[in-house]
Each structure stands twice: as C-alpha cells, then as structure tokens.
Image (cartoon, rainbow, N blue to C red; front, side, top):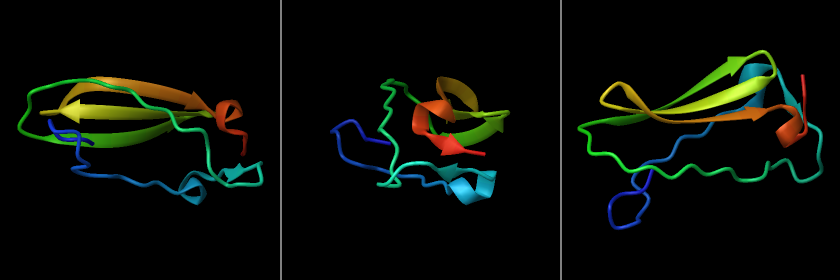
Length: 80
C-alpha cells in the first residue's frame, strides 16, 4: 500500500506453497498486477482468497471492500 505521498506504507507477501500451487516458469515471478484506488479509512487490510483455480486479492478499508483483483492460475502460469 502506498501513502498519500506515493511512499510504500505496508506490503504483504504470500507463498504459492500455502495454496498448493507451483510456478511453471523459469523466473519464479509472476507479472505484476496493480489496482489503483483511493479511499479515506482508519484501517486498510489486504486479504487473499483462493477459489478453485483463481486467487482473489481484496483491499479492505474499515472492513469494507475497496478494491478486488482476481487472477487465474493460467494468468500466472501456475500448476495446481
């Protein structure tokens, strides 16, 4: 997450192993996917959900969904 001046305020990392998938590519890094949103909130949290062969990244602002990005295994060349 970036603050209002564009500086990194917080980061979150997830491991493929935690979700039973492995990358099927040499560099072991997926293409970056960004979703820009602006919100005034007392708290912001990033949650990751897994549904079938799709990851859903959810940005929550004061426990309300502010942004959502879904990425399929095929988008990131992952093997289940």
